[in-house]
Length: 585
Image (tube, rainbow, N blue to C red; front, top):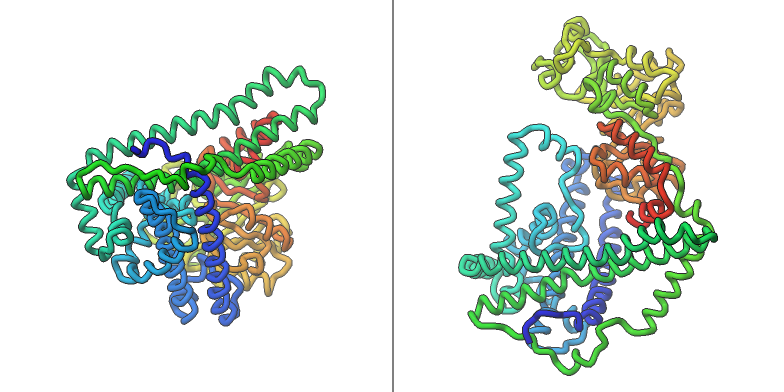
């Protein structure tokens, strides 16, 4: 038969997915054990973005990086190997046991132990998620450019154009080599030969492939729209037009929860089929392009006799669990679905994008907007004063190419920030302006961020009686550790854009995490250690709304006005919106 519907394969695919994910979970657990050993041998519980010296100047750092490379290789190779080998079985009609397919996938790993194979693994793990085309893996499917790097790309048009050109090149690379793994696994080719063969097939059939991908994408969009209508738009409509007549609030909430929870469970089950179905269809195209003949899936009696849905027992168990959990949540609604957000808004670089950055006017803007805190960056001048500036020099903000360390305070005070009347502020001015109004997060920045800066800044804060109204933060963990060791009365925060290991054991009061690394489990772990979580720097509408509904203690952002509007809206949410906020995480 032509591969128009593959739903009869669903139970078998779910079985493969479950077994494969269990095996990969064991691999991740083993990997964690192996990588934590060299960390402990170096006297560390975690490695993070501020540990470049450790990563590149100790034997443990390169060893951990090598293990990460090995993880990507094994995860990509094994995860995709199983799916492609299974697709090959579907085309030939072979009813191979799962364990036999897993064994073949493992035995195929040595074929990829070469530079070409490693390149394929890294592309699938790190590049394909950015491009959004071709094959990907669950481990990194949500991987994207970090927000702080994306903001730089967006701010400089040339960088934006170069980034788009780079993405286009990567997209072509992925599409041209999409049949590479098929050539290796199904036809026994070497990786290099399979790459060449894939390019040749795509060169001849790229129009057909593009047309098929468009049709497949439209089908997925249509099914997604149907799913949203059934499980999300319907309960929303019911809440507005039917539930007002229901006098029992608990019953109303139960109906909403059970409907939405069922929707998310069905979405998860369906999403587990998308990539395997895609690979089966890609495998069909590979055979058709290779032979220039139509390929028919052999629907064996064994597969035809299977139910197109999981066993009745599993369905009943899931239904019972859904109803029980929904009942519990409905009876304790406010505990599971909080009314108000508790995440505090912190203006980035003074007042965020609402005023000239790192200036007194920016700080006053943050105060006027009701921000809980304001984050500023300080550096030391040539004559030992501390001024507020983010970049290495003043070129971007004031047209001066010299660094703060090359200028005296008098010279710096002549500058005007971002073509305004705002002078470069001093630390003392920012502290005085913030006292009694908001919490000031002072980032120790640049080459002058050292122990001398720590000592000086603590003394400046102490003289103003602001030990509990200022938080000293830095991306240099050694400085935060120094402050916590010698000045435990001072509030501190460590900023990192990636971390591995037990980050909760780091010596700080606040753990500042780049938004992509700020997972819900990490927040819970940090809170369990009596510490607080900062997330930096969510600026988009979706990112802000997401983190404002989590347990993050603070959100550093450039868009304070937008965040305030979201908070006001979140605090007036309906029951439906409150449930959706929690389940949508």
